[in-house]
Length: 141
Image (cartoon, rainbow, N blue to C red; front, side):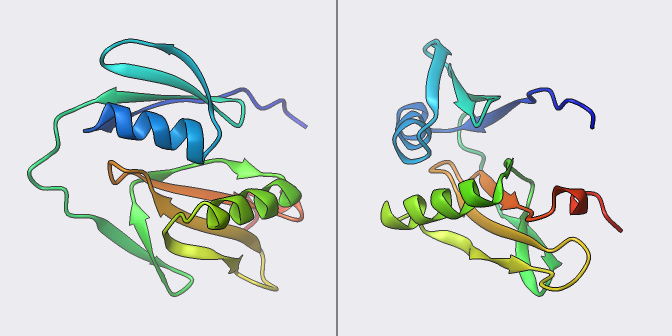
């Protein structure tokens, strides 16, 4: 099996303080370096950076249909171990996170079966976290 290296992703946020609190206190991400315009976070071992950007005048969300659900595009997230996903989704529910797509099993009984959930950060960035009981299904056709 090939070793997976951490990814780096930088996303725009229009309220740095509110998003800093969300990633730190709601998602439990450890905070790294920061400045007046950006903050690094450890997102399950990956480097997520929130960068201040003024709110866009047209921030109409786009969705694509997947398994009968309206999936927000773009989105990002992490594929978690099954047990971690279950615990994380429970913690998010307990903290009152509003889901775009509630945690559920997608493609149940089919190739690519997975647990998934979608929610937004305070800047409207869509996050998806998912898990596979069988990680061999990650790229299965």
